[in-house]
Structures are given as structure tokens and as C-alpha cells.
Length: 458
Ligand code: PEP
Ligand code: CO
Image (cartoon, rainbow, N blue to C red):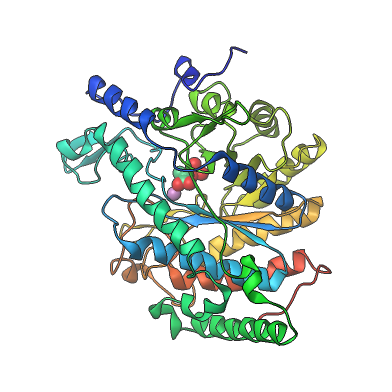
């Protein structure tokens, strides 16, 4: 194999990348990005790998979630804070029930590029390039918006930097202190059954803290009660952007992607000789690999050999996104092949991308029940094969959107029209996300039974 460089991907076939009409503008944007500060540091990647190595050993659990696509129009504190707080709530529910640490990773601060099944979109007889995410073009249906614009690479960097700055403040600056657990629920969820259940759980946690403090435990000196670790991730789709943000770790002499802690390979670009695999093999980040129902055991093993030849603990997260109807058939052969090859990746379930349907009134949506079914199928397959179901990957927001159907709110087709705001795929809202966490907590607790699992409020 030829040697790797940050640009060796250019010798390979690159799917899903835009053709920029303004080649000079693209070069200028790349040069500018190359000169900017890294968004994350290599020491943080090492820390995430250590956390994920503990997930792979069955000692912790991974929770990854956020928008399908972030948008340049979502600015200010609210969108980021609402996603952060719902992930925090879900993590608390899972931590409490399963008595195990939950590693929190956002699809955030860089999730701007989208793979599309069609190059073009036709509306009313007019055909234009498809929308590919705010880092590439605009969503409005007109020729100017849909033209790929290299300046958007720089806007994506600035937006990511601002988001990450806020996330670091939220994670470290007091908001995530476990003593403030009562304040994490969004107003629209507070009066719902989920909100009440969370309130009861928060009450138990507060009581436990008070008990421990009464026994002489000095909470002020336990940093893990006052702050959380929160990592970022996105699909490594836009290779011009990722290349320009590749940096050298002075300590190890190895390259790392400075755009996020974890980067994942999408279902449509996991071509073994393709440009995306070529780029990812040379960087030191945590690498996710999306696996749809067409992934054969040999494909997965080839990807593992290419992306993790040294079998580094915590390096790889395999993200199965099979669909609730296919997971029972499609996942077990992969679990067996990976296990029998002696590989120990984190296995994570994305119950969103195999369960997208169109509603009677034309919205792209997903059913709460099918999402839950796929998660159950994921746990069942692992139980059968004796492997560890290590994590979950959701498209969600803490906001009160109406994009997925079902759940206790019983959202139907008509409700979708009310607040359908996603820039791409439908997300679980704050209430549905919390509800799902409570339902899954029971499944996770029994998967880990005997390891100190606790019951949740009814
Ligand atoms: C995504 O995660 O938004 C996505 C496009 O997923 P996949 O590659 O699994 O289809
Ligand atoms: Co999506």
C-alpha cells in the first residue's frame, strides 16, 4: 500500500463530494483552514479512546446523539444547550439504571456535510443539485443557494468553534453539576410523564448525594460530580475540510483530525479502496464505521484491518444501522465474524437510519416504536452471541420539534406539520428522547444484570 499523507485520499475515488465551480476559491478556503487553530487536542482523543476501551470491555456504555445535520441558521445558546441537556438527562437515566458510566459524544460542532442518494432534486420541472449540508450549499431551492460555495467551509469552522466553546462551558462551568440535576429538564417536558419520572429520579440522586455528604464524603473534592466529559463527532464526509484541519501531534509524531474527537465513515462511503477510508486510516482519532444491512462479514473485517491494523483499544466504534425488520438477520453474522477474528471494537446501535419512512402527508419520518424495536433487537443479538452491546446513536434534539411519530406524546402524521424543522433527517424531540432512555434503561440494566443494576421510578 502506498504511504499515507493528509492528501493521499486524492489518489482514490471520492464519492459524495461536490464539484466546486470556483476552484481558486476552494484552494483559498483550504489554505485559510490549514492556518487556523485545531478545534480539539490529541490528548482529548487519547482520553476518549481510554473511555471507549472500557466500553469495549463491558465496563461502560456509549451514548452518541445530536442533529442529523447542524444548520448555520441555528445560532445562540438555546439549540446547543437543549441538545446537551437532553443527552445529559439520558445519560443520567442510563447511568442510574445500569450502574455504569456513560460516555457522552455529540453529533455536534461539525456535523454539516450530508451524503445524498441522488445528485439532483427536481421540483415542478426544475432540476437543481441536491442540498448536501450547510458546509457545501444552501437548502433553499434556487440555483444560487444550491451552488457549492467554498466560503461555507470557513463558516462551518467558525460555527463549530463557537459551538464547541459553549459545549466546553456547559460541561465544565457548573451547568452539568449533579447537584443541579433538577434544572436539566426542558419546560415542555417538565409536566409530562417523562418529566415527572425524571424529577423523581433527580430526587433520588439528590438524596443520595445528601446522604453521602452527611457521611463525611466531601463532594467539593469530587470533580466528577461537578463537570462532565463531553466529546464531539461528525461524519468525515467532506475530505477537503478534514484534510485542511489535519494536524500533527508533536508528542507522537502522528497525524490527527483536529475537527472532532471522533469521525465516522458513512454507510455510502465505506468503500475499502475509496477516498474516505484512505483518509481515515492515517489519522489517530476514534473512528466510527456505519454498517447497513448490506455489509458482509468480509467487508467489516477488511475495514477493521485497514482502519485499525494495530488493534488499538478504543479506536473503533462499529455503528449498526440495520432497520428494525432486518437487524435480527443482518447483525448476528457480523457479531460472530468480528468476535471470531479476535477483534474488540465497541458495538453501537443507530436505530434511526434504517427506519426512515414517508408519512401520508409527505414528511420523512421515523416511528418511535420501530426505533425501540431495533434497539431491543440489538440487545437480543448481543445476548445470543455473547458479545457486549456497547452503545446507542440517535438523531435527536432537546427542542419541542415534531419530526418522529409516536411515543407517549402520540405524534401522528398531522402533528408532523406543526414543528418540522430538521435540516435533513427527522430527530427525536426532548420528550421522546427521555422516554426512550427510560425504556432502554430497563433493557440495559438486564443486559448488565448482576453488575449492580437498580430499578427506576415507575
Ligand atoms: C447520518 O448519520 O446522518 C447518515 C447519513 O448515516 P448513514 O451513513 O448510516 O446513512
Ligand atoms: Co441522518
